[in-house]
Length: 227
Image 1 (cartoon, rainbow, N blue to C red):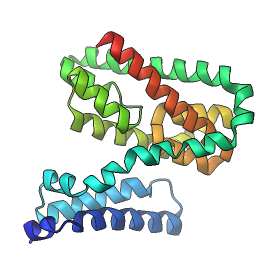
Image 2 (image 1 turned 135 degrees about the vertical axis):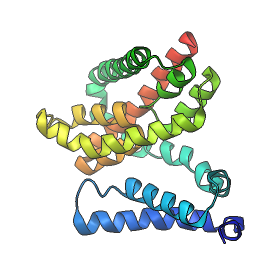
Image 3 (image 1 turned 180 degrees about the horizontal axis):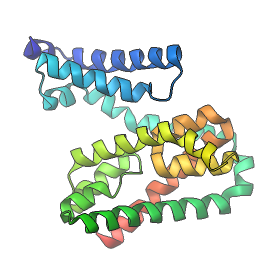
Image 4 (image 1 turned 90 degrees about the vertical axis):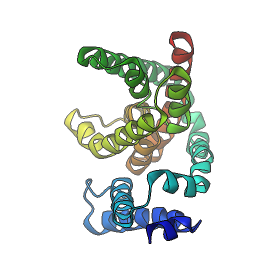
Protein backbone atom coordinates (compact mmCIF):
# COMPACT_ATOMS: atom_id res chain seq x y z
CA UNK A 1 0.00 0.00 0.00
CA UNK A 2 2.79 2.38 0.94
CA UNK A 3 4.68 1.66 -2.27
CA UNK A 4 1.54 2.28 -4.29
CA UNK A 5 0.84 5.61 -2.62
CA UNK A 6 4.49 6.69 -2.78
CA UNK A 7 4.49 5.87 -6.47
CA UNK A 8 1.73 8.41 -7.00
CA UNK A 9 3.53 11.65 -7.79
CA UNK A 10 1.03 13.83 -5.95
CA UNK A 11 0.37 11.83 -2.78
CA UNK A 12 3.41 13.04 -0.82
CA UNK A 13 2.82 16.64 -1.89
CA UNK A 14 -0.84 16.47 -0.83
CA UNK A 15 0.22 14.78 2.43
CA UNK A 16 2.67 17.59 3.22
CA UNK A 17 0.24 20.40 2.43
CA UNK A 18 -2.60 18.65 4.25
CA UNK A 19 -0.49 18.07 7.37
CA UNK A 20 0.53 21.73 7.45
CA UNK A 21 -3.11 22.75 6.99
CA UNK A 22 -4.16 20.62 9.94
CA UNK A 23 -1.40 22.23 11.98
CA UNK A 24 -2.77 25.68 11.15
CA UNK A 25 -6.26 24.58 12.18
CA UNK A 26 -4.92 23.33 15.52
CA UNK A 27 -3.13 26.64 16.06
CA UNK A 28 -6.26 28.66 15.32
CA UNK A 29 -8.45 26.50 17.55
CA UNK A 30 -6.27 26.26 20.65
CA UNK A 31 -3.95 29.28 20.15
CA UNK A 32 -1.08 27.69 22.05
CA UNK A 33 2.59 28.05 21.07
CA UNK A 34 3.10 24.29 21.15
CA UNK A 35 0.62 23.91 18.29
CA UNK A 36 3.05 25.29 15.74
CA UNK A 37 1.91 24.39 12.18
CA UNK A 38 5.41 23.27 11.17
CA UNK A 39 5.84 21.12 14.27
CA UNK A 40 2.38 19.56 13.95
CA UNK A 41 2.80 19.08 10.20
CA UNK A 42 6.18 17.38 10.58
CA UNK A 43 4.82 15.05 13.26
CA UNK A 44 1.82 14.09 11.11
CA UNK A 45 4.01 13.44 8.06
CA UNK A 46 6.39 11.24 10.05
CA UNK A 47 3.46 9.31 11.51
CA UNK A 48 1.97 8.80 8.03
CA UNK A 49 5.29 7.63 6.57
CA UNK A 50 5.73 5.18 9.44
CA UNK A 51 2.17 3.85 9.22
CA UNK A 52 2.29 3.40 5.44
CA UNK A 53 5.90 2.15 5.44
CA UNK A 54 7.00 4.75 2.88
CA UNK A 55 10.79 5.21 2.66
CA UNK A 56 12.01 8.71 3.50
CA UNK A 57 14.04 8.80 0.30
CA UNK A 58 10.90 8.16 -1.77
CA UNK A 59 9.05 10.89 0.11
CA UNK A 60 11.86 13.40 -0.44
CA UNK A 61 12.00 12.59 -4.13
CA UNK A 62 8.24 13.00 -4.52
CA UNK A 63 8.31 16.36 -2.69
CA UNK A 64 10.95 17.91 -4.93
CA UNK A 65 8.39 20.37 -6.42
CA UNK A 66 7.85 21.78 -2.93
CA UNK A 67 11.58 21.87 -2.24
CA UNK A 68 12.14 23.95 -5.37
CA UNK A 69 9.81 26.59 -3.93
CA UNK A 70 11.88 27.09 -0.78
CA UNK A 71 14.34 29.53 -2.33
CA UNK A 72 11.69 31.73 -4.05
CA UNK A 73 9.65 31.75 -0.84
CA UNK A 74 12.70 32.90 1.12
CA UNK A 75 13.39 35.64 -1.41
CA UNK A 76 9.78 36.86 -1.11
CA UNK A 77 10.57 37.88 2.46
CA UNK A 78 12.34 40.86 0.88
CA UNK A 79 8.90 42.38 0.24
CA UNK A 80 8.47 43.18 3.94
CA UNK A 81 11.98 44.62 3.99
CA UNK A 82 11.28 46.84 0.97
CA UNK A 83 8.06 48.19 2.48
CA UNK A 84 9.98 49.37 5.56
CA UNK A 85 13.16 50.41 3.75
CA UNK A 86 13.15 54.06 4.82
CA UNK A 87 12.62 53.19 8.45
CA UNK A 88 15.29 50.50 8.38
CA UNK A 89 17.98 52.80 7.00
CA UNK A 90 18.16 54.68 10.29
CA UNK A 91 18.74 51.46 12.22
CA UNK A 92 21.02 49.69 9.74
CA UNK A 93 24.28 50.08 11.78
CA UNK A 94 22.61 48.64 14.88
CA UNK A 95 21.13 45.77 12.86
CA UNK A 96 24.50 44.96 11.31
CA UNK A 97 26.24 44.90 14.70
CA UNK A 98 23.46 42.78 16.22
CA UNK A 99 23.48 40.24 13.39
CA UNK A 100 27.27 40.01 13.37
CA UNK A 101 27.38 39.46 17.13
CA UNK A 102 24.56 36.92 17.01
CA UNK A 103 26.10 34.98 14.12
CA UNK A 104 29.54 34.82 15.72
CA UNK A 105 28.13 33.77 19.10
CA UNK A 106 26.04 31.04 17.43
CA UNK A 107 28.97 29.60 15.50
CA UNK A 108 31.34 29.84 18.45
CA UNK A 109 28.93 28.26 20.93
CA UNK A 110 28.18 25.33 18.59
CA UNK A 111 31.89 24.81 17.92
CA UNK A 112 32.75 24.85 21.64
CA UNK A 113 29.93 22.43 22.51
CA UNK A 114 30.98 20.04 19.75
CA UNK A 115 34.59 20.17 20.87
CA UNK A 116 33.58 19.69 24.49
CA UNK A 117 31.52 16.62 23.60
CA UNK A 118 34.25 15.24 21.39
CA UNK A 119 32.14 15.16 18.22
CA UNK A 120 33.78 14.47 14.90
CA UNK A 121 34.56 17.18 12.39
CA UNK A 122 31.80 15.91 10.11
CA UNK A 123 29.17 16.30 12.82
CA UNK A 124 30.57 19.70 13.82
CA UNK A 125 30.36 21.00 10.26
CA UNK A 126 26.83 19.64 9.99
CA UNK A 127 25.69 21.48 13.13
CA UNK A 128 27.43 24.82 12.63
CA UNK A 129 24.94 26.33 10.11
CA UNK A 130 21.96 25.62 12.39
CA UNK A 131 20.70 29.21 12.52
CA UNK A 132 20.61 30.11 8.83
CA UNK A 133 18.05 29.20 6.20
CA UNK A 134 18.36 25.69 4.77
CA UNK A 135 18.76 27.05 1.22
CA UNK A 136 22.20 28.30 2.33
CA UNK A 137 23.04 26.09 5.30
CA UNK A 138 22.75 22.73 3.53
CA UNK A 139 25.02 23.86 0.69
CA UNK A 140 27.66 25.20 3.10
CA UNK A 141 27.55 22.03 5.17
CA UNK A 142 27.93 19.66 2.23
CA UNK A 143 30.70 21.70 0.60
CA UNK A 144 32.66 21.78 3.85
CA UNK A 145 32.28 18.02 4.41
CA UNK A 146 29.15 17.86 6.58
CA UNK A 147 25.98 15.79 6.20
CA UNK A 148 23.23 17.71 4.42
CA UNK A 149 20.36 15.66 5.90
CA UNK A 150 21.59 16.28 9.45
CA UNK A 151 22.01 19.98 8.75
CA UNK A 152 18.46 20.18 7.42
CA UNK A 153 17.09 18.51 10.55
CA UNK A 154 19.05 20.80 12.87
CA UNK A 155 17.97 23.92 10.96
CA UNK A 156 14.31 22.92 11.18
CA UNK A 157 14.58 22.14 14.90
CA UNK A 158 16.33 25.46 15.54
CA UNK A 159 13.65 27.36 13.65
CA UNK A 160 10.77 25.62 15.46
CA UNK A 161 12.38 26.15 18.88
CA UNK A 162 12.97 29.82 18.07
CA UNK A 163 9.39 30.17 16.87
CA UNK A 164 8.03 28.65 20.08
CA UNK A 165 10.42 30.07 22.66
CA UNK A 166 11.11 33.45 21.05
CA UNK A 167 8.02 35.28 22.33
CA UNK A 168 8.52 33.86 25.83
CA UNK A 169 12.16 34.98 25.87
CA UNK A 170 11.19 38.44 24.59
CA UNK A 171 8.78 38.83 27.50
CA UNK A 172 11.24 37.37 30.00
CA UNK A 173 14.01 39.79 28.99
CA UNK A 174 11.59 42.68 28.31
CA UNK A 175 12.64 42.84 24.67
CA UNK A 176 9.83 45.08 23.45
CA UNK A 177 11.60 47.02 20.70
CA UNK A 178 10.61 45.64 17.25
CA UNK A 179 14.11 46.26 15.86
CA UNK A 180 15.67 44.12 18.59
CA UNK A 181 13.00 41.46 18.21
CA UNK A 182 13.56 41.27 14.46
CA UNK A 183 17.33 40.92 14.83
CA UNK A 184 16.90 38.19 17.43
CA UNK A 185 14.40 36.12 15.45
CA UNK A 186 16.10 36.50 12.06
CA UNK A 187 19.61 35.79 13.33
CA UNK A 188 18.73 32.90 15.62
CA UNK A 189 15.92 31.06 13.83
CA UNK A 190 15.95 32.14 10.15
CA UNK A 191 12.73 31.88 8.10
CA UNK A 192 10.64 30.05 10.68
CA UNK A 193 11.51 32.64 13.30
CA UNK A 194 10.79 35.41 10.82
CA UNK A 195 7.24 34.15 10.40
CA UNK A 196 6.76 34.62 14.15
CA UNK A 197 8.39 38.06 14.03
CA UNK A 198 5.88 39.11 11.38
CA UNK A 199 3.09 38.12 13.75
CA UNK A 200 4.56 40.42 16.41
CA UNK A 201 4.74 43.50 14.15
CA UNK A 202 5.40 44.43 10.50
CA UNK A 203 8.61 46.23 11.48
CA UNK A 204 9.92 43.24 13.44
CA UNK A 205 9.18 41.04 10.42
CA UNK A 206 11.03 43.38 8.07
CA UNK A 207 14.08 43.53 10.35
CA UNK A 208 14.00 39.76 10.74
CA UNK A 209 13.97 39.33 6.95
CA UNK A 210 17.03 41.55 6.66
CA UNK A 211 18.73 39.83 9.59
CA UNK A 212 18.34 36.29 8.25
CA UNK A 213 19.81 37.42 4.92
CA UNK A 214 22.77 39.09 6.60
CA UNK A 215 23.30 36.08 8.88
CA UNK A 216 23.40 33.79 5.84
CA UNK A 217 25.92 36.03 4.07
CA UNK A 218 28.17 36.37 7.13
CA UNK A 219 28.10 32.62 7.76
CA UNK A 220 28.90 31.94 4.09
CA UNK A 221 31.92 34.25 4.22
CA UNK A 222 33.19 32.68 7.46
CA UNK A 223 32.77 29.16 6.06
CA UNK A 224 34.67 30.06 2.90
CA UNK A 225 37.64 31.31 4.93
CA UNK A 226 37.65 28.73 7.70
CA UNK A 227 36.61 25.50 5.95
